[in-house]
Length: 113
Image 1 (cartoon, rainbow, N blue to C red):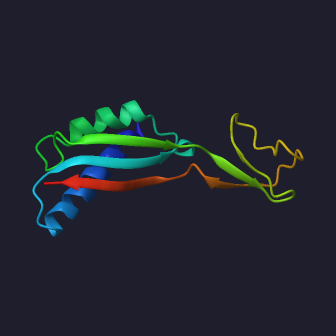
Image 2: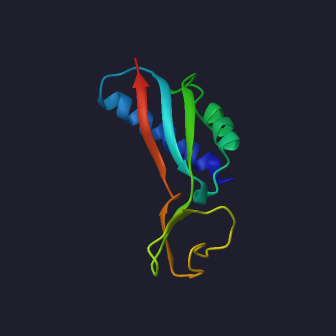
């Protein structure tokens, strides 16, 4: 379950940032998580709740925005959202596609006291 290590990294990063900026607690943390990362939002939320106990992140609302997997065809330049696990351009059937979004794993914002 890589959600546990991700939650630990989020808590560590947010706590370090709070301390560096003279803040005592996080009240809301917003994450962007791409679907291609295979992170399960409910598992990440549960792991965050567990690893944040006793830290400046304890009790903070964790908001997770899932970013869809978007691709661009290198042949016809079409951009499309991946609906199935077939990396095939729906316009020209080319397999020469490039992922343009869906791999994000970002702390988008933190609200603090």
